[in-house]
Length: 252
Image 1 (cartoon, rainbow, N blue to C red):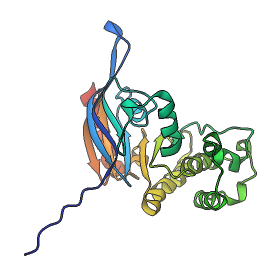
Image 2: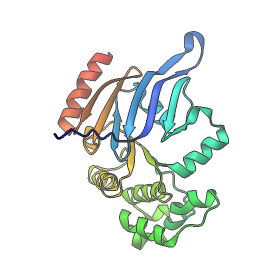
Image 3: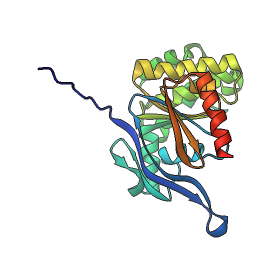
Image 4: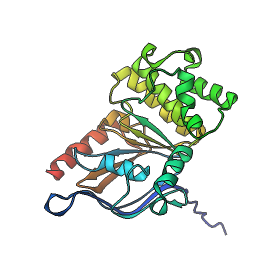
C-alpha cells in the first residue's frame, strides 16, 4: 500500500504575531497588526499593498532593520528579538543581503570594490573565484574597474544585486528594486532576481508597487491596514493589479 509523503519546505523567515507601533498615546500609529506568516526557503515572495499598508515596515522587521513592538521574527532558526544591536548588525552582514531603489553604492569605489565592501566591513577577504562567478552572473565582468557614475541605472542595480549575493546570504531583501528604472531595464533586473531563485536556490523577499514586478515572484502577499489581507500563488500582472484595485477599495 502506497502512502502519500508530505514534504514541508523549511521557512527562511517566520513572523509570529508581529505588531509594530510608532509613537505613543493618541499619536500612535499601528504599522503592523499581529502578522503571522512563514516565507519559504528558496522562494520568491513579493509584498504589496496600498500606501500606508505596512509593507516597508514588514520588510524592515523581517530583515532585522527594525524591532517589532510585539511578536517574534526568526531568520532560519534564530530569534531576532533576543539579539543585541551589535549581534543584529553581524547577522544582517553575514546572513542577509539588501537591494534598495536608490542603489546605495559608494561613488568613489569601483564595481569590484562596491561588491566586496560587505566582506571587507566584516573583516573577510573576498574569494576571487566567488567574485568572478557573481560578476558573470550579473553581467558585469567587463565593468569591474568602473565607478557608479560611469554606469547606467540598470548596471548600478546589478552591482547592488551582486553586492547582496557576494556573501551567499540566506535571504535577499529587495525594497522597490526597480522603482528608479525604466521598463526595459527593470525587466532585466527582475529576470536576474528570478534566475537567482531558480538556479541558485536563493530566497528573495521583495517590496514592490508594480504588478508586473510582482508577477516574477512565486507568491504575493497583500497587506492592508497592517494585516495580511490576501495572498496569490503563481501570480500574473493582471491578477495582481485586479487584487490591488479591490484591496484599495477595501482599505478606504
